[in-house]
Amino acid sequence: MAHVIGALPLYIPSPPINSFHIGPLDVHFYALGYIIGITLAILITRRRWRAVGGDPDVVTDIALWVVPAGIIGGRIYFDITTPDDIPHVWYGVFAVWTGGLGIWGGVALAAVVGAWRLRRLGITVGPFADAVAPGLLVAQAIGRIGNYFNKELFGKPTSLPWGLEIPYAYRVAGGIPTQDLRFTTFQPTFLYELIWDLALAGFLIWLGHHANIKPWGLFALYVAGYSGFRIFEESVRIDSSEYFFGLRLNMYVAIVMTVVGATWFVLAQRRKERPVVVRSPATRAVGRAAAGEPAGVAADVAGSAGEDADAAAVPDEAEAGSAGVSTARSDE
Image (cartoon, rainbow, N blue to C red; front, side, top):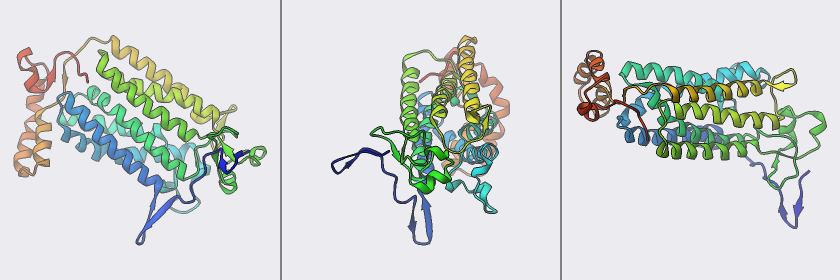
């Protein structure tokens, strides 16, 4: 139950609204959070990609592909794993503005599409994945603010001073067990994840600057670190979910992905260091097109990428810097 000392409530109150109007447009805080998060992720990744010698315009190009893929993948995951939470309207499976994006589905499809696009540009995928990992965590953290406005992503009842107030209607709609409906404040798991995501993002940036992490290492730690936290989070959450053998479905996913991420990191660090390409003729075409150069010129440059990429993949040591290729590793 909620506690009060004097006039000061010892809980986090629920927001009175979850959207606002700009003329006829109804802007949901959930969607706004993801827009801001994605924007910050792009800006962070551009800075990190430039730091390893890559063309920052490539980040924007990749984002045009992976952002829609991430939303589609996240929604598909949500619809498959929590079908009872799909709004009962004809467009319910698409209604992302009401909440409902599964992070694992979003990252999985975005990673596949992003890897495809990077290979088309002649860029080694691993270093780019390492560059984007902290930005992904920042985007996820900002997105959790949207969960707060939607009054979702909460845990077990609590009387802690930072307990999250959940109105009765949202407790019922959120699938809280009957015996817990009498409580008004619950574990703010959205807040726990927000703090963890930002802390993990900071750690990955620090580690990249202070350790010799081979490509895919930081991204693997992102997978392991985020999924490891979700093991704790899923043990606390009591909102709507599919259960198997007494455990939430996402608990199984979190355990598997934690093991996958940790194993991936170990194997990546044991691999022999290989040359990596962070800038290729195809990426120069992207930059020229972004700068407004005639399409024919950019296309000619892109067309030569296939011929030049093989030669650029293993350059002489003296040419490595100017070619945008590292003969050892790509680091912060």
